[in-house]
Image (cartoon, rainbow, N blue to C red; front, side, top):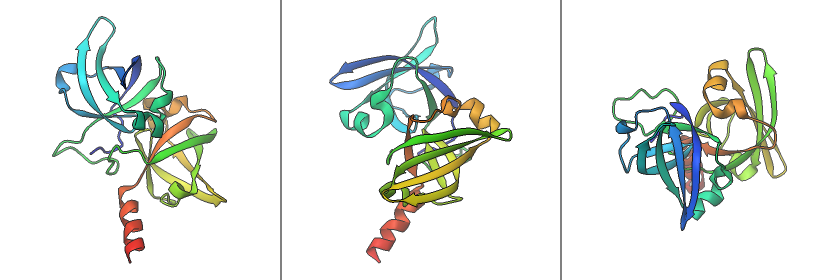
Length: 203
């Protein structure tokens, strides 16, 4: 489990196709504190560490992604040099500063608008209505691994549009500062919304 509070921004150093897709990601964290087999949320995708190391450039760790993961998340479009939000798995006793995040991406969204708003930024996204029905104003959503509060939601046909406000700290310390219209992001809906929907269907 994760919190959606990004601990650092890493960078894709290498992508190798060997059956599955193997990705090497640089990090500032001391790799000696990373266990082989540990889970790390990489842009919101829960991935397992299969190797790690240090060199003159930086520390790094390797993860593997299946074809299914590449198809259902933005990982299939990653390239060397891409910046990646990183969060290690939650440990017992850690502060839950965001909201409960599983690292299981529900689908993708597309950025439609990025504009300054005071000292912050307003970012608008669109996604399918099938996913959008789980997104509520003042509720939580995870975007590329970042726990954010939804400010506005609007449905139109088969599409849902929603907006978030990004404070300067989040803007500076996550990949949202790279945001541009047309870019795709990983979305994970609030865990509670899944159960509410299931209860409604079963009721």
